[in-house]
Image 1: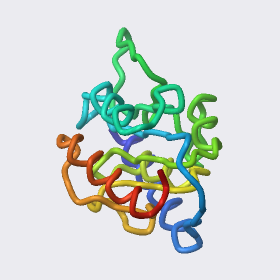
Image 2: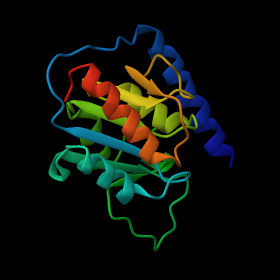
Image 3: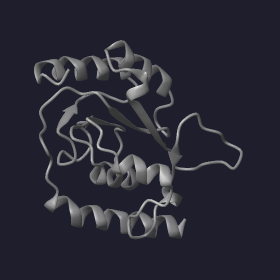
Image 4: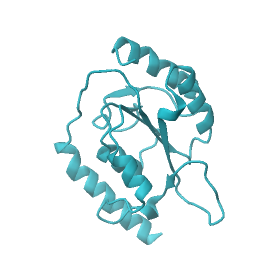
Length: 172
């Protein structure tokens, strides 16, 4: 418990230090590849969300998923790559190769699918090399290019609004 508090404090300090110098990039062109960062603590219908994205024209093979979970049980299995607070060093470096690869991959769009601010998720969104970042309006406004006001449980509404505005922005 005590180490969790220290690590959270350290990660929040890193985020607070990097955020003022952080610049969102604006890119032209259609969205082909999508990174999907999901907080499984609050949202467990990942497959339904993926099906909704596929139904709106994003090929399933172009969607890469990363799951965050507060606590991972020893015998728990995951369908997609995952990480927790334990997979982050005190200096904010991601220790799992899958997570580091996800952060460094230049996705056309990163969907930060979490509506509760948690330091590990904010850090990953901040460090991501994605060209266009989308998230919920309850999260720090400086992290995403585009924010949608809804709750995580209403994934159909989120995807509907997302694609409505992506068409307006000529991203699809």
